[in-house]
Length: 242
Image (cartoon, rainbow, N blue to C red):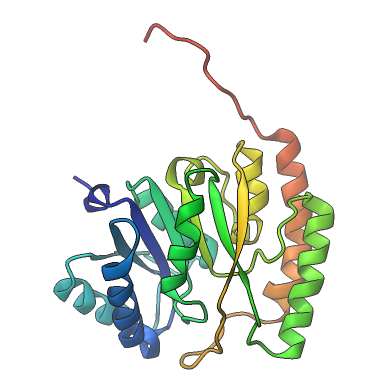
């Protein structure tokens, strides 16, 4: 039996070359699990790391009862790691946080009260601690995405989210889908809520984002989303004798 079935919330943490952050992740996430509003566990997804991240996460999971991992055979990117975690989870809710800890695990408790009414509850980074150029790129990308998708989301790049697992498992996944979660949840009939959360500078490791995957690639993905939305099959069964 899938061990995440014993919890209400599975927190998915995609990992790619984050060995310098693994100790902090263990400390911060284990501390949060003790104060979580619902029974929660952590699911590390190793996205083909080339450093010592995988061995360190196995050590953590060996000594922490509420920590689990899955290992991708090769690097597939953030969207692939998120999909793997969502597909593996059997808890009613799935959360997402980045391994860089620029958002606080404790702020999941700010999102959880809204999960009864909304299928996606996501953070908005208050007092964002990024460079002017990085913030400018995100502002441009968010504005273009809202124009193309009409998702009304302020900050889809905020790495703190909670979704209903059944809705998350229904949405179509593709490379770059992590930027379109509000639009995709809306596509399958879900509702979205944004809540301000804290944001901090990265203190260890190296950012995996640059001009192409923060600005240029999302522009292209917007057109892919619009094409998919017109052709997406979303049905409801009204009755059956199966």
